[in-house]
Image (cartoon, rainbow, N blue to C red; front, side, top):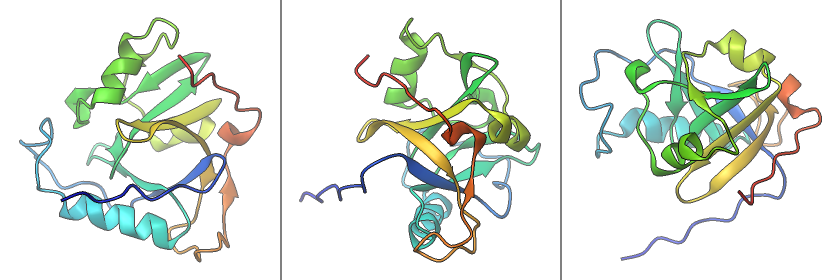
Length: 163
């Protein structure tokens, strides 16, 4: 059985923040499993708000990942992604970007404040590749994007995705 991958609207994607931190401890966090109810609910909530995905934080306030993506934030000129120790999944596309010298990416704890001050944001997964982020929507935003807030990352985002 195959499920078609729905096309995305053209241009950068929007994200939303989860209302609550991920429950802990999560011993299976390092593994791709079918324990996805919380993540799937985050994806559905994001789509209902006109966004691509919901970003989750852990109880310490560190960004972990999205329901279907890994976040990379460009901070002080360097691409950063949450470390596995904070609960992130070691995804295929994540590993490819970390290994690519052109990205010069590192793992480091990221807070919501770090993400909101980032020079640029991208999300990635093995199915979609690397997607630029235009900003965040309010969790209660209507599907049309009412209440959208632009992120500093939206201005001038030009990333070479052919690497």
